[in-house]
Image 1 (cartoon, rainbow, N blue to C red):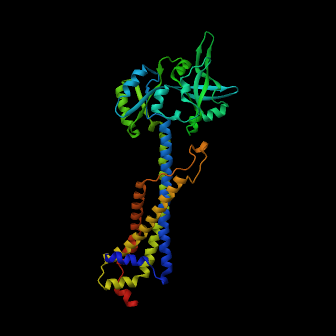
Image 2 (cartoon, rainbow, N blue to C red):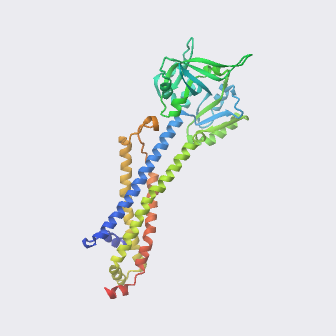
Amino acid sequence: MRFELFVALRYLKAKRRQAALSVVTAISVVGVMAGVAALVIALSINNGFRLELQNKLLGATANVNLIRSQNDGINHYDALTDRLSKLPHVVAAAPALYEQALISNRQRSSGVVIKGIDPRRELKVCDLLQRLTKGSLQGLSETFPDADPIIIGAELARSLGVTVGDTVMITSPQGTLTPFEVVPKYRHFRVVGVFNSGFFDFDATWVFTNLNAAQRLFDLRNVASVIEFKLDDVYLADSVARSILKAAGSGFTTTTWVDQNHALFSALKLERLVTILTIGLIVLVAALNIFITLAMMVMDKNRDIAVLKSMGAKNKQIWTVFTLHGILIATLGTILGLILGYGGAWLGETYRLIPLQADVYGLSFVPFIPRPWDGLWISLAVLVISFLAAFYPSFSAARLDSAEILRYE
């Protein structure tokens, strides 16, 4: 063991008469431990919310959407869908028709987004319709003498007071032109299923029907408003979108899941930054404690420093002793903090210790998803800050005049 490390380790074990110094050292260790553990747990929660929201959004929406630039609808969408589905990284593609309408049941009504789909293709692109709490997806293929099939969200079903088997009326805003005026066009739909995505907006405003029924309602025969794509790697969405746009030809544009949820993920990134800055203050306080600990130790050990110098220790070695002492405090606190932080995150995720109101937050518990990379950069940051905090006290110890100290001791 090197001389500098040996002395630094000895100084960690303060003697009984140096109880105050020992307490300050313990406080420094606890401060570093608390800062590291808090950062690990906070970032685990941030990662958990981001990944849970991302997975749910990707399950409910497509990775890439192809639409017409003039928003005039896509003709011959079946052939185009089959051709584009063969592009690299495209797992599946499905046409869909989006329109807004008014849904009503007796005296209750609400504005909704109607999505006309091909059920067979839709399941390969999005899994939202796999989250049915009532009814079945096969109901979209059924025919009724007086209505078309429809699947609605759980929150919308609650607000309208309907369930599977009930009939609702959907009114199209386009209407039908007559010699006298524009008469609103409406059709009756029978509820064949209720889904629960976990997102209030989807559950309260989205309804699904088959593509033919949506085209009849809006008088858009053989037209789709969008072709949706699922990719084998969602992080390639931008490059694949460019490939799709090139293959589709002129008159089209694309959007990706990042574009559609840009505000949400930007907010999560900002929250992560604020979390690091605010909780990082704990680490700065711990670094200040290390500074105070070393300053007190230099004053307490000035005679030891003089003796070491008189025995041939160089200024650089004295500086190294006290710098190592500060780094050892930080290292011990960091190790304990990582154990506490990752252990707490594991317990929180395994036993779901913090429940949430699912209808408000979209999640029934706070997710903890710690990442090894976070622990690595937190540890490096703490060690760098601790080194900077230890620099000046160690430098002061190295500059002490051993002759002057021994003269008065």
